[in-house]
Image (cartoon, rainbow, N blue to C red; front, side, top):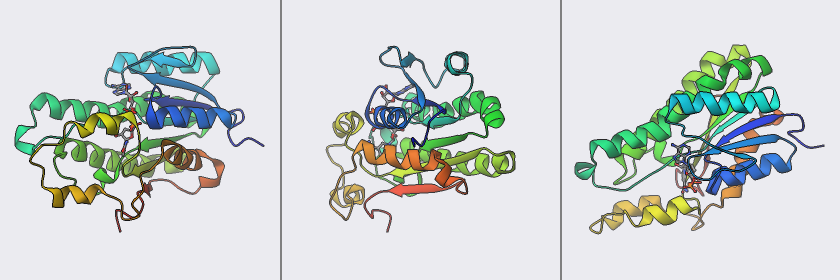
Length: 238
Ligand SMILES: NC(=O)c1ccc[n+]([C@@H]2O[C@H](COP(=O)([O-])OP(=O)(O)OC[C@H]3O[C@@H](n4cnc5c(N)ncnc54)[C@H](O)[C@@H]3O)[C@@H](O)[C@H]2O)c1
């Protein structure tokens, strides 16, 4: 039997990388999946911007109108750029917080009435950079650290009302985000500090591995798991 038969999932950042892999896996396992992204549009992919409250209301409303409600919210949309902290501009800082932290807050809040009604769940894609310092990514670390505590605070507040809220914390995942961000690493980056980004098992994570972790946290098998941060990091945190 499919794990998500009869369930409706909303996946942000679904045009690429981890979001695309998550939408595909949930769909394969029986869910009705609505993807959202600022890039691309199609039958199963709505155009939407998680930083814009009006856009969030529109795509959450559209998903409910299409499928009658939402059981699973996967907040995957995100962005990152490297820069020395002294070169990080205010617009850079604000964009990281808007996409990676305010976005999941707005989407979760907009979906909350239907999640409460259907005893649904939220899975946020944070990062190992939300649990420990990473060089040249102060704005990213601040946004993902905020997302980890947003996850825990919401989990605590909503536990007795039947809504679970969890986060996954990947290390380096092979996606277009990583390919693009490599170009922004400062040319004078301290290699010793950069080594902190490398997993001791020497492997990179595949998007489907994060999708599997998200699916597990969204599944009935995880009914007693809320407020957790699941590391998929090849031992980087050890
Ligand atoms: N790739 C990694 O190594 C890695 C590691 C840890 C955490 N993450 C996190 O995983 C998530 C997905 O990253 P990915 O690697 O799949 O990247 P990706 O660039 O392949 O996909 C991110 C998607 O988010 C979309 N997006 C960006 N801003 C948006 C907005 N305002 N509204 C709606 N959609 C928006 C992009 O258009 C893109 O399709 C991000 O939150 C990222 O921080 C990635």
